[in-house]
Length: 226
Image (tube, rainbow, N blue to C red; front, side):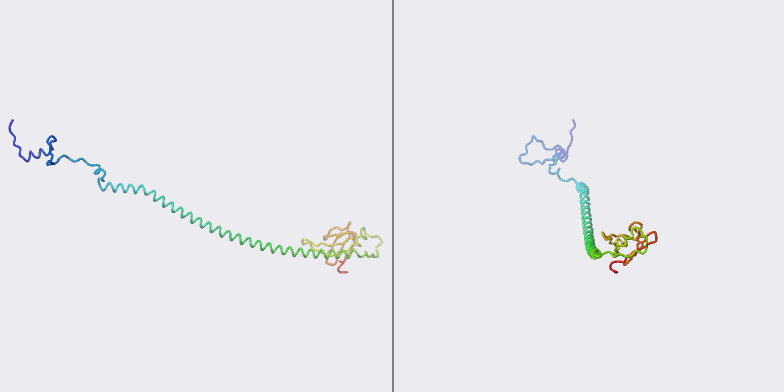
């Protein structure tokens, strides 16, 4: 085998590549380990690059964005509901005041109408009292007999001559004549049949006229005008 010339530098490089021989002890730690170091757990846990950390931050920001949007929408909805409630509350308050004013006006109008009704009722009582006094005074008077010039009397004429005209009164806008028949008081309207074919043809304050189809008429003057 031919001899090979290896320089000392080349030999050292070869030994460095081969590493230390474990069979040869090195109690003083003179040899330096040339074997590649294994990565420690701490080195594995460290971020490998700044770009990876920025991507993680962006990813977390994207995950949190819907939560922020949902929170903002919730705040806006709560604010809108609060404003709507306050507006509705103010409208109800104004409506309550309006109804109270209307109720007060109705109470005043009812009180006024009650006063007018009481006044009309008192007037009616006064009128009825006057009629009762007139009827009582007429009932005490004896019927006055009048000579009859006609040989043939019209039916019911004698009975009608004993009647007394008490006066005129309006009931619901219709003029009514009051007559005392000697037994009771009757109230009749114009053109109404009184007795038999006798009809009330005319009503005035102090005079009433009864007519018969045969052409006969009777005039009655009120008791107040006598």
